[in-house]
Length: 243
Image (cartoon, rainbow, N blue to C red; front, side):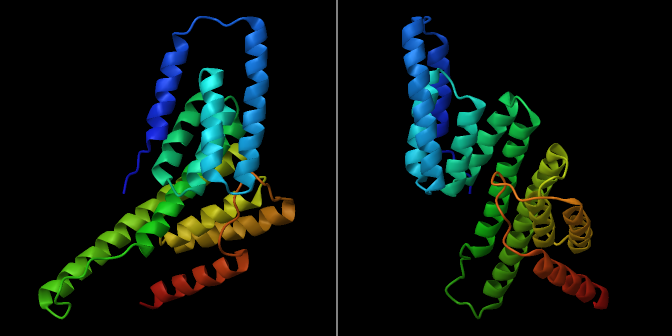
């Protein structure tokens, strides 16, 4: 399930065309700068209200006026794609953000989007339907279902582990100052069947929380609480030991 929306190709075309245009008068450039700023502000407001399609249009228009997408615009586009569950487009846009990022904060933002996108793809793999042949009681149908379940499990595990790797990079780039990336990292490891590693991260999170980690609006909060994750990890580790 790889989606490549036309928006991404269009953005690249805009950048190429803008590079060939002659310089504009200073007054026109200043006027455009004001328009760009307003568009970005409105697009950010759209994001906060979950109007992701509108946000996309405004970010693209801002990039068109600017003659190319700035890190701020790319970050906004990546968030909008993420909100629309266009996970591959979010990953591609975040990869572009990594190429032009000016500091560790922007790089952390890109890796966080990539992690959340892989996490979302893992959840899609789990919840998407499985084809069952007409005769579900036949031996052949049972074997096909078993093979598909194994394939789905492997694919889902890889998505979650890719998410975990991205969240780990966020932690490194932010110096481990924020709680959400640690928790996202632990949850991705847990869902990727790395239960013992997830438990170690959660123990580290407890220590870091005492040392003053804090919440940040830039990082989406995970699905589980720390305590529920610890309980789930302990149960999984015990079950694996018992078997």
